[in-house]
Structure formats: structure tokens, C-alpha cells
Image 1 (cartoon, rainbow, N blue to C red):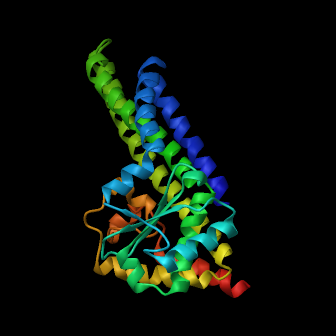
Image 2 (tube, one colour; image 1 turned 90 degrees about the vertical axis):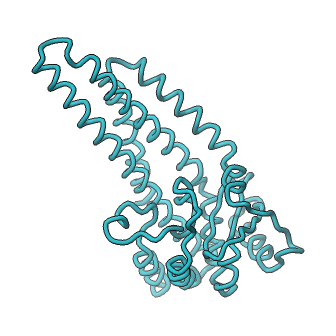
Length: 284
């Protein structure tokens, strides 16, 4: 179901992109904006692991530096039938983890020192299995494509507003004003819709990774217990230095979002994720 939802949302992004391209008078402007967005996201895609790891000052560790962590990752990679990912450690009291890399052959798993302090080995296995599922199912690729299209939509929406201001009065004043107003309203709606679709895709992938991680460990309660601790840990020690653009990578939102802001979180509600995992355990 989540895979179908992700595909549907990607189609909607493409439709918005094409419609905005026609709105500003043909495909030339749309193609130019899309090309710029594609280049930016191409760079992000090919070097995403290096960019985010450097952003957080992550240090690569091996079996000598983190023997338990290494053994868990090695065992999970064998179960998932993916190459052994590189392992990185981030010095931060905020408990979290993420996976990156453009494909399974270039997979990376990163954990904070905070998560190593508060989780049991079983809970840590649940978290790492979640991240291994991201790597196995090439979620970075999906996120990169979504970011490319959403970025193009935002750029074209800006171009549409700019064009409307300078060409809206070419016929009658009333008609020109109406055109300007219509273009501005739709371009704002399109930009907002692209953002919401990106959030929905990110949330869908988190549910899929939860399911995949639970299957790898054979016990959904490992991850459920970890998520409960991580939720409380991030509330006490949010990762205030985190870049918002990297938030979808983490297993739990590194920021504390409450009230209306939680509607725009890149992650599904922790309570719902725990509830789904516990239901999976009780069905076994």
C-alpha cells in the first residue's frame, strides 16, 4: 500500500511540474528551471553521503572502535543480502541514527553517541535494521527524485510569479490583473503542495523501513522499544544544530515539533509507528 502511495505522490509531483511549465508560456522556461534543479540534485545524489557526514563531523569507525555496533551491522547486512555499509559515529547527546548513500553498494549507517548510551543491544539492532531497510530499498534514490521535482516546481512557481508581474497587463487592465492574481495563487499552492508531497513520501518510506527492519530482526518490539526511548531522548536533547534539509534522513525527527508544526514533520507520529510495530508482534 505504501509503495503504491509513494508512486501516486510522485505522479502528482510530475503533473504539477508539467502544469506549471505550461502556465508560464510553454516548455522552454520549465525545461530550463528543471535543468537547474536536476543539476543541483544530481550533485546532492552522487555526493549525498559525503555532504551529510561532513555536515555533522561524523567519523568512520570499524570493529576495533565499536565492536558491538560493527557485529550487529555485519549480521544485518548478511540477512538483508546487501554489501556491508560503512559505519560512522556522530558526537552528539541527541539519540538518533540515519542511513545515506546513493545505492546499497555505497551504503552508510551513522549513529550518534547519544543513541549508543541509551539503547539496549536488541533496541540498537532494531534501529540498525530499520536503516538497513532504507539502504536495501534505495530510499535515497526515491528522496532524490522527489527533491528534484519539488525543487523544479518551486523554481518554476517563482518564474511564473515573476512572469505574471511583467506580462499580466498585456491585454486589458482587468484581464491582466486577473491573470497575475491567478498565476500567483496557483504558484503558491503548487509550491505548498510540492512540500506536502515530499513530506508524505518521507513518511511513507519510514513506515516501509519500520516494516522491513522488523522483518530483519524477527521481533518488531526491538524497534518499538527503541522508538519510545528515542522520542523521549530527542525531547530532552534535540539536535539543535541539525540542518532541516537532512531531517528526513534520521530515524526520528531531530527537532521537537508540537501542535500545528507536527503536521509538517517529515516523520509519521512516533505513537503510530509504535502501535503498528506492536500490532505486528502480537499477530505473530
